[in-house]
Structure formats: C-alpha cells, structure tokens
Image (cartoon, rainbow, N blue to C red; front, side, top):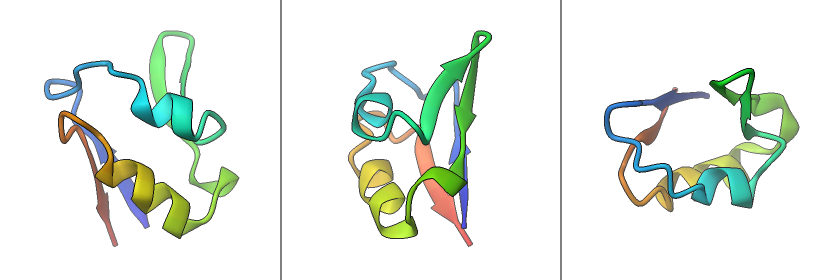
Length: 59
C-alpha cells in the first residue's frame, strides 16, 4: 500500500495526525507518512476520514 498526500488540497485539520500520530506526523517541517506503524485497515480508515481529500491510498 502507498498513501499519497496532496499538499495543495490539505486544509490542515489534523484528523490524520490526531487519529494515528505514529503514522501521520510532521518532522522538521515536512509531512511524513510511516506505514510501518499501523495496519492497512486502520490507515485506510483514517485516509477516508480526511476532510479535504488530500490523502488517498494506492496499491
């Protein structure tokens, strides 16, 4: 699985960071997605909750 993030769509609501802070985080001013920190089902669930649609999954 791959998670794509579109910075131009992101409204910075923080849903992803609040839901899975070990997966979705900001480090040194950069948005980071670490897929090794959760299972695919949980990650996909958070991606679906993104209010702006900035996150999407790909196989």
